[in-house]
Structures are given as C-alpha cells and as structure tokens.
Image (cartoon, rainbow, N blue to C red; front, side, top):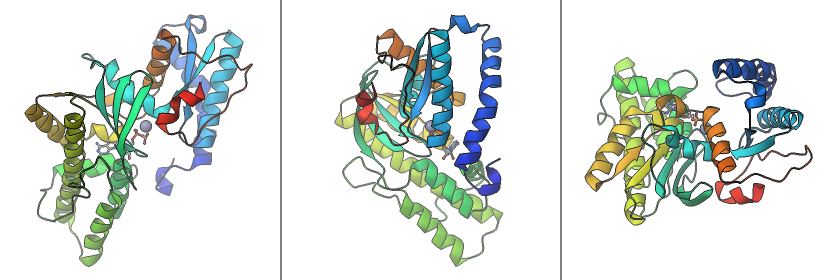
Length: 307
Ligand code: KG4
Ligand code: ZN
C-alpha cells in the first residue's frame, strides 16, 4: 500500500490498522488456542511513532481492557526491541550493552534491568535503517529498501567504490549516516551505473555501515566492561552486520545475542513480552478510568515518566 509513495503514509496506515485490528485479535486468539478471558493484561505500543497509528492501537487496547476488567499496559516501542532477544532460546543475562538499529533509531544503551536503560550514544542525523532506505532509493530499489539493498550487496564486492566510515575515530559512541548517503548520491550523479556497479556500491555501503556499527558497539562493551552485546531492530537482520559483530565480539572474548530473525523487525510479540515482564515485576500503571495518551516522541530515558 505504501510502496506506491516510497514511504509510509500516516493516514493510510492508521485507517488500515482500524480495519485489521479486530480480525487480527481473533486470529491470534485462535492460533494461540486462547480465549479472551485467558488474558491477564493487554500491552500496547504507546510511543514513539506516528500519532494516528498509536491512537488506533491505544484506544483499542484500552477499551478492550476496560471491557474485560484487566490492566492495559502502555509499552515503549524501543523497549520492545531491546528486550526481544530475551525471547530467544539462550537469552542474555543482565546487564548488557544493546545496539538498537531500526528505521528511526541508532542507539547504544547499557541495560541494567527491565526498565533501566542508559543511553550511551546515538546517531546525530539519519538512523542506520533510514540510511539503508534512502540509499536503496538512490539505487532505484523499492521500499522498504533495507532488505533489497542487502540482497543486492550480496552480489557485489566492497572496496571497488570508496565510501567514508563516518565518525569511526570520533572517540565517542555517536554515529552519523547522512554523509554516507550523500557520498552515494555523488557517485550516482557522476556516472551511469550498470547492475554490477550498483551491486558493488551496495556492498561498499553495507560494509561502511557494518564497520562503524560493529566498531562502536565493541567500544561500548570495552568501556563498560561488559561481554554481552544484544542487537535489536530491523537492521539487526542484516547478515553482514552480524558477521562483523560476531567476529569482533569473539576477538573481544564476548558474545552477541540476536532476536529470532522474525522478531528483528517490528512485531507484536516483543510488545506483549515487554508488557509481561512489567506485569511480573508489578510495574503496572494505576488505573486512569479509561483515560490514556500516546507519545509520538518519547526518549527511552524518560521511560519512568509514563507510569
Ligand atoms: O525495527 P524496524 O522493523 O522498524 C522501525 O522501528 O523502524 O526497522 C525497519 C528498518 C528499515 O529501515 C529497514 O530497511 C531496515 O530496518 N532493515 C534492514 C534489513 N531488514 C530491515 N536493513 C538492512 N539490512 C536488512 N536485512
Ligand atoms: Zn521498530
């Protein structure tokens, strides 16, 4: 639906969510062999994100919770990503360093416990996923571009084109990806590229992003003396990034934890899991008589303020 526009159209998205929510709930209950009365609480994403889409989910979850007389638990989208590796077969122990790489965020965090997150560094401009999407667009690939660019990169060789490694030696844990996209644009404009050229350029772009992310993630582990690294968010599905992270972490004597591949990109299971973790710890907000709010902008270090 969004492909035609080259990106998500907020109003189309929220209208579509309204149409899909009730059939989706019914299907999920059947697949899980559960009844509505089996639900102990309802977790939903209350931010950050597009206001319209957040409101659809929030009003649906809050109304259903009121009707069933159970708690509704607002969840931070990024906290869902952060905890998603705990759903895996060999979950990491706390504390750990988390590299969160999604379409909207590139952040390194120290995770002490559920609900205790310290931001160590983030992108000053484009997120890694955004850089993948914009670069894919420059190369004439569809939307969302990340997976398409990664597939094209498999056919090419990094190093033939030379792209910068932004902020690799900045000495801090910040990132910047907008210059990389501009460097690709300069190459695209300067000559006509055939399919093999495009594949080589895609491979070099992927290599540049993977190198910067892996180097800084290891630097964060070293600085905080932690040997467990958790990778979450859509870009965490990138196989070359995984290769580089695994190699660098093995050298460092540590281990990388990934969510199951299907839980890397946005999904409801990670939000439900996050709500369940909060419920187990008694972190349930007071009943507000059905009143609720969404937070389109919501820094993760302000998590406590929502409860
Ligand atoms: O976490 P996510 O599903 O949604 C957000 O919360 O943003 O991340 C989506 C992002 C998109 O930018 C998409 O292009 C990127 O993750 N992505 C990838 C890959 N799969 C998804 N980027 C690079 N390589 C991939 N294999
Ligand atoms: Zn996400």
